[in-house]
Length: 262
Image (cartoon, rainbow, N blue to C red):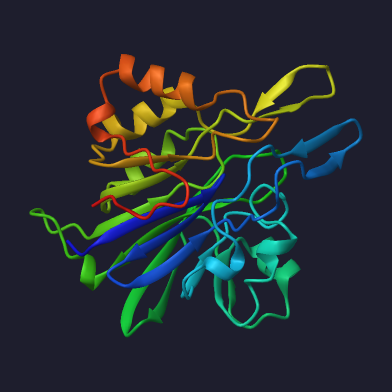
């Protein structure tokens, strides 16, 4: 296995470095206190500062953008990174980001290839169920440099994107040996017309499912601090994971600090 490191910046924004190739996920860099009205009577507001600014980032080879239309996954500062750079996202997102020529929109389970730092990468979009009617994807990353497991399955890294847990993942993801999962958690909720709330991202128990059902050796929790629409934060997340006895598979990362995770 090559060296894999993660530097958490904020929310679902991480610098993921695999054998010298640098990916950036869901780029958001807005300061604490920023508020985004998204529907009448409901706004998204952050209370945390990004651990790194745009100027402090390393050179980015590719951006993995789970969806273009929510500011906690892509804000105005993050959009500055998308010009003249490989970007992988949803078909709808790619259309909205046009005419950037290096933006690729992927449908569920569609695979594309790209050469980064002299290495051929295969990037596969995984389905998400997020807000009704909206497009969102996760990403499987595989490369010859990642190697294969003892059964011949290609080793891969999975960034889940924003989604509730999907039973359909288990069968399809068995095509790969997932060595690392970057999981968007936080049990984010949005109001419904009847006065209730709809959960639109995973929670700690879903992270437990991923670890157990997919036999994942390392899961990095993301997307669980700093936004008002999250309903499960760090302490409760950790308590559930400890109670489920899976902490040996969980890797919490400190914002702004590069950490080897594999």
